[in-house]
Length: 218
Image 1 (cartoon, rainbow, N blue to C red):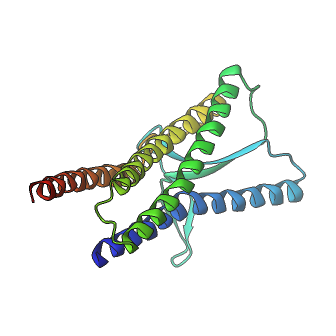
Image 2: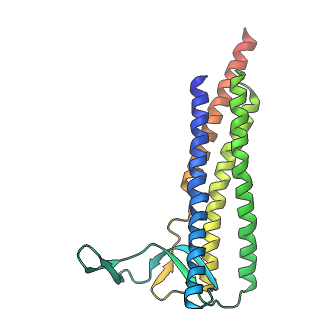
Image 3: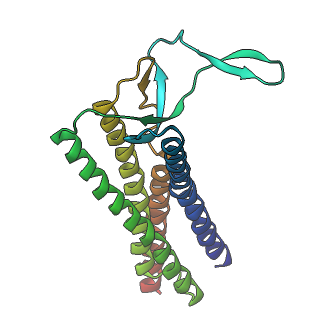
């Protein structure tokens, strides 16, 4: 019993850590980028039309940026960034496709946030049930199953959000030396967690059925 409670608490902690990494940190990076854009506009008296943080890959794999310097040796170094912040002073007119994709992102983001809020409530209900020694309660099966499905859905929707964000960028921006990268669009962590939880839930379901059959036999 104590072990199950401990694992539930660990899962809750891991979920919040994942939420911090995938939501809070990107949000904070966005805030810092917004502040930098505002500061740039104030200092240079120029208007920034849009900014974004995105993964990139060079169009020519022989290309390296030669503008950086190693301050320890005072020598130039070659770098190839994979994640960049882009600030644009102007963009092409927004097409109908762009507006539809932007609305789609807003809806998906709202769904992901709603699902993310739901998981802690389900975990708390499971912990309360365990405190009452209701380990083999079928309601817990439904709650665990929902948690697994929610994490799986969050992983898939987060991946879809990244893909749509890149599509939006490609509609408006074409860099001279870089392409936008799809290499890291799949959110494997919540997907794997969701699948593992669903497998564990199926094992628990079989255990409950065996226990019920034994109780009926007795």
